[in-house]
Image 1 (tube, one colour):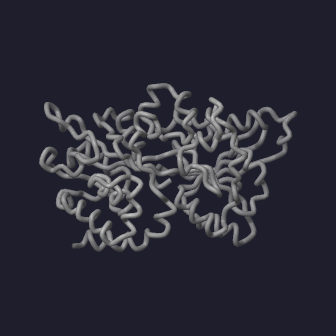
Image 2: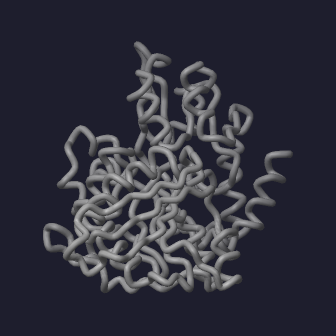
Image 3: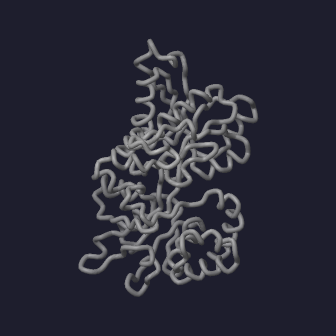
Length: 357
């Protein structure tokens, strides 16, 4: 995903229990983003699936997007069986006929018996994919900058220059910022996108952003906001939750995440149209999106499982850092990727024009 570190890799993961499995001679090519994210998938998904089935998995890395999938499909030479895609690419790839359909009836119930359609969070089950994790854009502060005084705790504090003066860091894009502006201005979550389809709604969002615009530093890469917070260049920053978590865990940074109205993005498994191993790929999806594999993945990366039943199988220490933990997810706002696929071009243009004014 665009929010993860990527390292080129092709890795062969071989099965150890080959003799009796019906899958013993089969192989899957599974494509993902590399680094810690692929490691989390290998440990939580690939290895247990190999142990169960004896299937050989070839793990490849890519840089995201649909270009390679499109090239393979159009050439009738599909080499990839499963690809980890961000939801915007799932939506677009499905609409363009690049992905196989995924019938949700393949999904097992949760470990607590909850039917899959009720166990997954809204939007996780798509006609061409099953989204397995939530990555969030959150607000974060450096607690050292607020010693002896009140610190921001909620979304509206981002726009409160009276009580929390100083620079802010926000991602240089309309997605997420426009939603936050309307939510902070009192708009109900279920009215946000309806308003953003109107001139009045957009004007209201940009007017809210105008109130802090002179104090905003715009970032374009995920490494920037943690550094801005560490340098005390800003008093509050939007950032990818995994980046803030890693800065705290690996570098001891005194950062605190504000989970209020986190902006959730999803990522999941899709099958390129024409894969010769569609049945096996669907079996992998059904297995890897079960309660336990999703919970196990959270041991390796701070991204939230999309099954509600997975929370009960994650240790409290790990759960506290996940976007989908019940206590963190109360006010979460999930980005509507279908909506953005229709309006992204015009809102990107309006946002860039607004930046220049």
